[in-house]
Length: 428
Image (tube, rainbow, N blue to C red; front, side, top):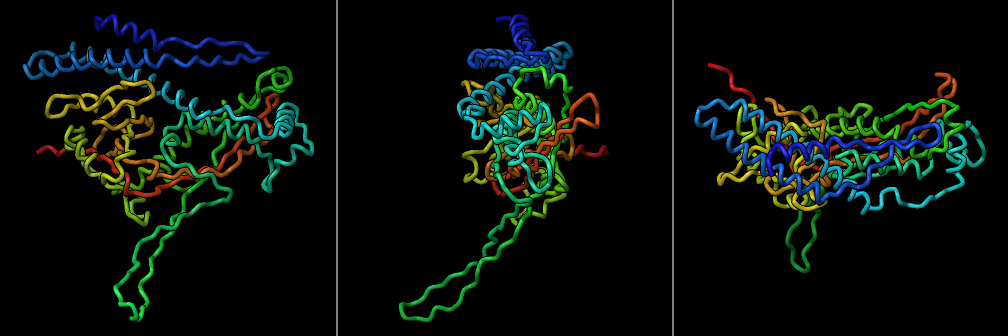
């Protein structure tokens, strides 16, 4: 297939738009059918094959000292399409995994309370059934189904929730004790005295938390007349803001009224000395303001083999663009696209998870994390989403002030490594 034909096919697939289906007085976007992942994977493999050919030509042109602007522009264009197509494959894989886990398919646990909640959202009705959701801080706890809907949607769009450990809690704070060792032992005969031995020492770590909120609005007339599913509508309004705030905090949050981000625990970071087990280890990038192929291999082998079984890379799309061009000593590309439906792209044989809030490749930054995220980072969810209905502040709109308590922090630094970009050397 010619490159121009392939690029046109990819561009057409990527620019396809969803149709809008009206429901009542609100146009509700129709969900796209699950894409043919096998077809996406096939197109991605073809696109990457074209990229490798053109990239090799680019390198040969540069080595020969010939003008390379045209072929460089061509490679960058193909590379951008590979990125877009890989993103489409990753999104499809997440939806497939969610369907296999049964996300959103659980039955109602309390239909009566759900009906009362819907009535309260529409008209502000308060009755005995709804009061069962009241807590000591005011407001009303959303139905279990709506709480679960938001959580499910956050899992689908939050990379950290997909790969890290999530712990629901019912208290305001959450702390964990870490065994620092120190237990001693000794050998004795059958009838000898057993002397006291040293006992283990423990250190606590408090996981920072805070409250995220969203404040969607609708006119009272729309609420009265529409036939939309209010739980789904509110969840979709809330999820984007929640996910945006969460994703950034899980990586860089300072722990003040928010989670403590994993990047802050990297060696040299603001919280590097806070964890009882020490900071996350760092491996250099092997090149000034760039990533060398050998550095990727060093990063992998710096992680103890006990943690590599479930290890993966995490980086943003700009960093993926850089590592996609890396080759090993035999000329093989370290980055490989998805070859099987449901599987992500790999770097040196390990899965790659895209995280938009990771840093770019610049001197001193840590744009790549590698390790077992399930053992490394803990997300703490305070059970219950609260909602306050406010028809007075912004007439004729009814505001729905929605809050959720979320925390997080480093669980164990040992199963994680970070790559730090070498700074640019000062000119002589």
